[in-house]
Amino acid sequence: WLLSARATIFQSMEDDEDTPWGDMIHTIMRERFSDLLEDDNACLEAYERHNAAVRAAVPPERLIDWPTGAGWEPLCAALGVEVPDIPFPHLNTTREFRERTRAH
Image (cartoon, rainbow, N blue to C red; front, side):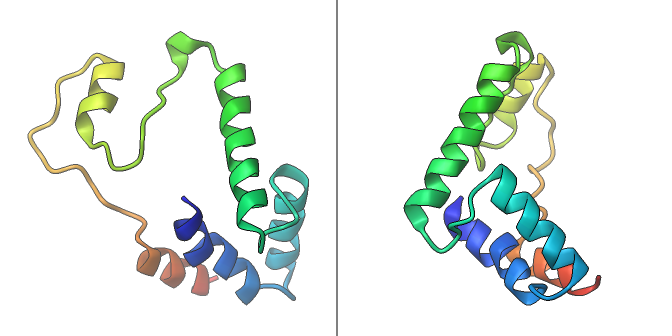
């Protein structure tokens, strides 16, 4: 997660640092995540803290704790539906994210 966040979200924050968009993102990150984005341990602790808060707030029968990259099987099992006969989509790559954030 951290490598992806550094290559996408954190990078776009640096690119937009002196803009209204950048100001908003920095405020959200400071208040809801961590103001120590250069510190790997602080970021990982914030990520785990966020995930623990979600797990505590959502009733277990409504929570799908789906690991990234796990494909259709665990997601479909949790939803009680058949696994589709199509490849699992891989969207929002680093390149796509960067192109999209540059467009604003």
